[in-house]
Image (cartoon, rainbow, N blue to C red; front, side):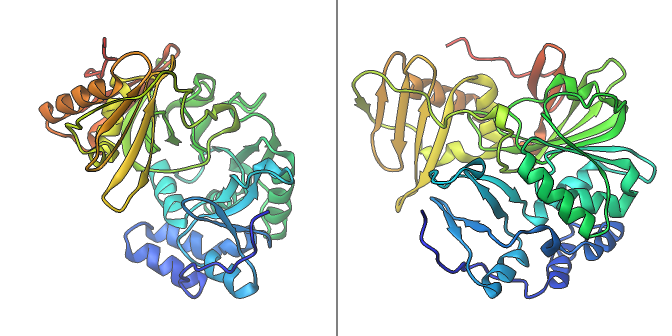
Length: 372
């Protein structure tokens, strides 16, 4: 059990002040500002919450600390360990950062009269914002966890909203729903399920955070084409809790004794989102995590079969198992340099019934996996 300590979140003092901050940052149009002002975040945050720290979740104790967190531009963790008692304390449900919610709703490009499907009801806050903008009957939301779904339904009803809610697997199409105009996922996906695309009408927009293995996460905005495919750009970083069916361990099992060599590349460079998108496409299946150090960062990279490498700023590289994973990562870095070190906004994604492919600058310029 984690110790009960007071959160150190910095408040925006009030919810209206938080909305003003988002507007000042250019994240809210006039329409969305009115919607946010009408839907207080506090109505969708339960009493028992945690603040996400780099290495743990910290319980928030006391009304002042609770309000400080709710009125800040921070995520609020609302469930640990899928609701099981005595677990390790891993966040499994949350109320997302208001700035991230604003970004995603802007990318969704909703207009009056359009039907929206949300994957991951969570606390119900995003559903409420959509209801305020579009009306209850046009908003549909699915949540896998029945306890979370019931809490969201109660919060929505108490706030005066009654969207169409369903308990079920958001990876699968909603039976009988028909086509929708917009789809938003508020949980991270490792890939965009094609069954969901089939639920969006041609010309429709899909906004989702993707969490691949090499990179921590990025938003993608896809437009569904007449042939059932979807394509669109990445729109900056985003870190969301993964859909339960899309969870994977942080790293693969490592095999073999370590062997060292001089580092030819500062591992801090690997954390650039543009490079992460490029490397994720060139080195499919390679997982990478990192932590900050006094000198810079330390990274760990692994792949199936036991190959691994770890490197820290200013130190030697250690490699394990078969192959030379660090050399492959370095080679991909030099390729990335050669194509001009593009930023994340120059990459995009295409999804078909055969899978998904990352491209650079043009959908026809697909980044193929390395042959190494």
